[in-house]
Length: 262
Image (cartoon, rainbow, N blue to C red; front, side, top):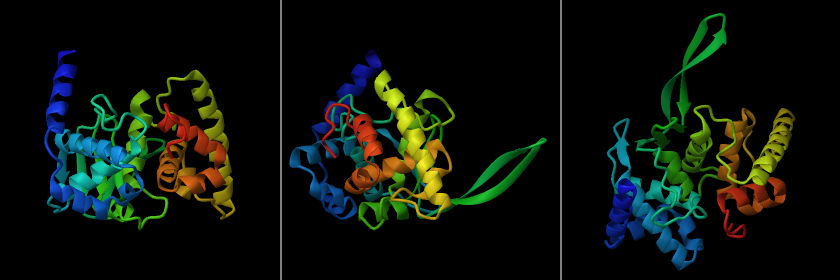
């Protein structure tokens, strides 16, 4: 209780400070989605950006020296994702389980291990744009974040992808494509709709004819949730047209108090 009060106090104090003037300039270029939102919503987003920039531990990797541009640009994408989850409010969604955000200048190599049975472990190095660790950091490629912010990545958003994994992992270490859902009715429909749409995407990818959703989403239900979350926020009108039932489901999940905000 005391910690919550102190956190709220700190956020109120933070919001008394004016938004740095340079943020407006850099976000007009690196978060162009802000051009499409109302002034009240934009103010709430900037308040969330202040919180993320202040409360998270930011680290540059691979020789990247972090600046306000990196922090504010990434934070704006997280705030975009939480528009229906109390963006800019003192008890809004600020991903408390994510203490650190690590940023590489571009795609990076990561060591992986795959247990293939009979006590055999296969090791490799894979190129990645981002990672999300259970109750751990989020790792991002700045090059990909910037391309999304400037609308150069069709239906892709690595920030939303990785933070969707964190929503997924709140009910267990192993992501399964089912985030924490308070409504039993929504939970039941979530399983039915995502399973059916996941199967449809797998079939489309086998036939070489995926519709809007990237075939990476066909690898598992957890990746399906993350990929579909990207499309929901980046290409909502196209998703509503091609995947109407999935769009309605995600709209109800991400905007529980107003299903018409996207």
